[in-house]
Length: 126
Image (cartoon, rainbow, N blue to C red; front, side, top):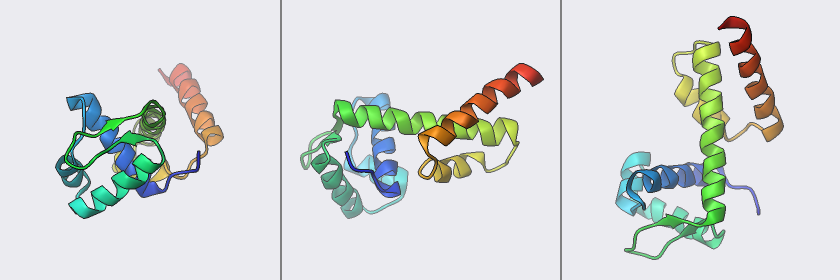
């Protein structure tokens, strides 16, 4: 599967969060959560549906495909690891914002190095 843009990843992550909370997502809720216009959401949903990451038809609840769920879970895991690193290890005030920006750039190999560093840090400083 081709890579997603930062924006597409943000939409997929938000859809996943809403699916976890409510069982599905809606255009209005995505629009409000990401602070974007509904037309932008609709455009993104069509792209994600074309990539077979979501199930989307206008005016119906949005759900994730198995592939979309897997991709969204990976994105959230990246975010969680990076936020922990920036907040708990580096003690940065804006750790969530930095994690959100970084999750789109970091490779799986580099993320694994950070994860291993966190594990070592916890063993040595707990």
